[in-house]
Length: 267
Length: 266
Image (tube, rainbow over all chains, first blue to last red; front, side, top):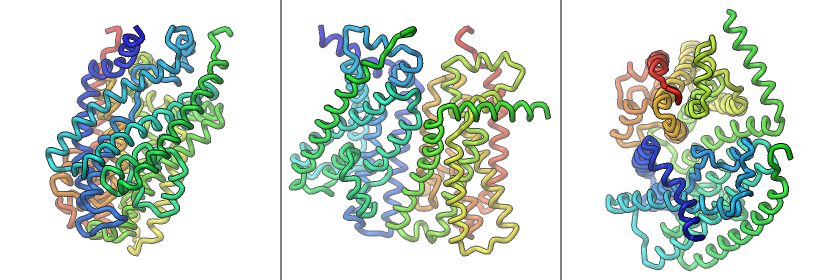
């Protein structure tokens, strides 16, 4: 029965997407055009330059294209379905989360699992096409592929908890739009979405090392392209795991505190 | 005149409404600035690692993001609410606008005050001052006039693109998703010489999505690279005029789309 509930909750976003053809079309076109543009840009930039910041042309293009594909895993867009914490707080419907037989934290996590699996299907399809077309390099060995997969899962967990903290902020603030945008910006910049972190100054790379964001994307992709050697992988995976545990404990604490603040209309 | 007075009074009220949430107000100013800074960060990283991008020196390249960001900041301030038409349709607000004695387009623009535009414009003006101070060009009255026209043309072209997306949203509300992508594309690819890209891709960003006309072509004309853009010089030179024409065309499309709009009640 629990599995049935989980399945029904997790499939909400994929079903919503399947019933919105413009969004599906937009995702397909966006991914295609973005991959072509990003690959062209990095090939163009490297046309007069050799290896820079420890990245060769193929590594940089592979990193950039994989970052585009990973964007499908990073957009937890429940806004269109009116099911964000912010919207529920605004309309007072958050109280229903606390009246259901399913705990709110589990509901939130199951929705995210469904979204990320749906996004993963897009990313995997895009990856297969890019690999067949020679746009991205394959992993250098089976060990690299395995470490990358593990790192990607840990990165997704870190990403989920970071975005969850943002949602939980809504329980204390009436609005969180600006905070959300700032966090998303910081997340994109410090995780290497805009450009691989290796291109940034040393102080910037050092600073990112103390924050959870680089664990979400930069680490898995750097492992994939070989910028982080396999010998350093255990340490990087351990850091990711530590962030997962810390953020899990922190968000669990916040869920408990948030529950005390929920009141239905009229008190 | 009465319309202008009403618009001004609504804007003042909207501004006061934004001030009601002080922390959110300050954060929104910050996010405008931060969004623009992200473009500068990306541009700076690329410029420092890949010098001589597309045959342009760094002071010349800087003029492209400065023009684009200033145009974008003005767009956000004056016409930027087109971003949210999809959401307003989903919430049924457009249906309300239709029965009021004011143009729907104007009501959309007056729906709230864009606080983030303050941050957007602050950073954009700063970058433009920096770009002009580093520029070795002779800034004659003609060049300055062309730069002003380019900024206004860029603003109108961006407004035209988002108005077209808004027209699509009148039919398919979920089409506002395209708006977010458009903004991302403008931010990522609108700030560099497009001749670093293959010709087909450059052509796509010129004739498919006319992003090159926002800042790249005007900057190329100003810096003497106008003949190396891959399009006839005259076409690059009339970019500001194309912005005006595109906006007028988009407004006609909006009027047509609105006349065919059907709310949830039929």
